[in-house]
Image 1 (cartoon, rainbow, N blue to C red):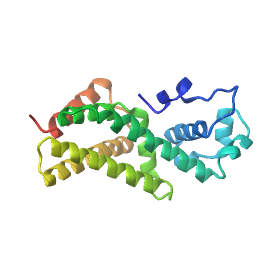
Image 2: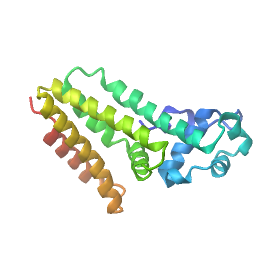
Image 3: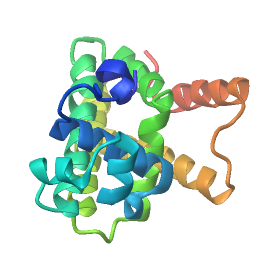
Length: 200
């Protein structure tokens, strides 16, 4: 599942009706994934959506307000569609495995996150990344603790896991390597899970 999968018609608004604030926020997220945070602007988004700028100002007072709404939408998606679904898995090791597999194949979210890391100096981006990172670390720590690790070991394993995720994204960016070949990537994900998830 991706961000667009949660929206009718893959995230595209019905052209026959009025665009909602959510439609604009989703379009901004799509643009962030394609061109980065700096590319989010009213005029290109209006052209993309096939409307006038007046539609934008019906919902948002400024470009920064739209950016904040887009980031909140991304954050909410992760909280509900990723962590929310995993809460039902009682076995902590199975929960970790499901998390690794889910995150590994959430390609669009990786791109958005990578673009946000490039814009950490933006006042709207930094607090969102801070909250998302802390939530991810807390979730990982809790799962490692439930899998039988001590508090300190669970915290260290959570940091190592998250550092591996961020580092993998950054390495791909540095090597200008958007995606590994399918078999190579799947083998890498399996290796990461075997290395980081505690054995029974």
